[in-house]
Length: 386
Ligand SMILES: *Cc1c(COP(=O)(O)O)cnc(C)c1O
Image (cartoon, rainbow, N blue to C red; front, side):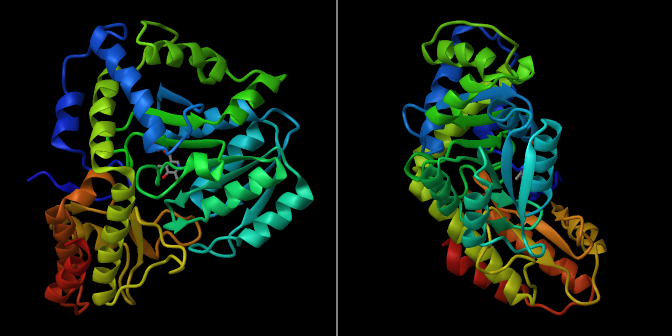
C-alpha cells in the first residue's frame, strides 16, 4: 500500500490535480497553457485575498526561490531590514538578506514554539526604521503562527514594506493581503495550495512593484520582476510569450488546484483548516500529548507534537508501520524532542485520512508502551470535523 503523506509539505493532492499534472507536457505557447496560466494568475489574487492592482508571479522553482525573489527585488546592498524570527525558515530568510548585503536586525522568539510580541516588533521597527520587515507567517519548524495582520498594519503605518513567507500557510491560514496592506505574500505549490512541488508563487503589492523600480542593484536575471512582469501580463491577456520555460504540466495542475480551492470559497477554506486543526489537536491531547507550540500561537496547517516522556524520534518510524508518513522535528535547538504532522490543503477534506493519521499515531504510541485510547482520540477528532 502507498503510504499516506502527512508531512508539512509535500502533501497529498486531489485526484483531479494528479490527472492534470500527469498529462503529456504541453508547449508553453499552446492554447491550453496560455489559458491555464492566465486563469491561474487571476485566481491567485482571490486565493491570496489580494487587490486587483497586485501583481502575481508564478515561476518554476521551490518556496526558497519565492523567498529569494522577494529579497532581491525589494532589497539591495546597504539596505536596513528587520527579520521577525520564529525559527528555521526565518533563519533562512535572514541568511538570504545577509547575502544580498542588507543590514539586518532580528526580533527573535524567546524560545522555539514562541514568537516575539507585536509590541516588541513595533518597538524595533520604530527604532530601526528599516526599508522592509520580513516575517514567516507559519513557521514550519515550530507550528507557530504569527499575528500577520498586526505586523502588516505596523508596516503600513510606518511606511515599511511588509513581506510574509506564507509557504506553510497560504490557502490554509487566513491572510487578507489587500485588507491588511501586506506587500509580498509568497508560497510554493506543494504546501496548502495542494500541488506537486515545483512552482514558486508570489504576489506583490503596487508598493512592492514600485520599490523594484528604485533599485540601483538589479536582481539576478532569472529572479527579476522586470524580466517576469511582461510574461505574467502576456499570459493574463492570453497572449503567448517567452522568457524562461515555465513548468507547463504544473501550470495545468495549478489551474485545477486553484479552482478546487475557490469552489470551496476562501472563508470556508480557512474555517475548514481551523476545525481540522482543532480536531487534530483534541486527538493529540486525548492521547496525553502536548504541542511544542505556545497554545496561543498554534497554526492550523500543522501540529508540532512533543514526544511523551521516555519516547524519542523512533516513534516516527513506528508510525510509518501503519503506512502514515509524519515528519521529525526541524528546529535546530530541539529537533529531537518533537515530530510534525501536516494537515493542510486537500487533506483537510479527507476525514478518512485524518482518522488514519490519528490511528497510526495511537497505535505507534501503544506499541511503545504509552497507554492511550484510540476510541477517545477519534471521538475528539470527530467532534470538530463533522
Ligand atoms: C517549506 C517552506 C519553505 C521552503 O520551501 P521549499 O519549497 O522547500 O523551498 C520556506 N518557508 C516555509 C515557511 C516553508 O514551510
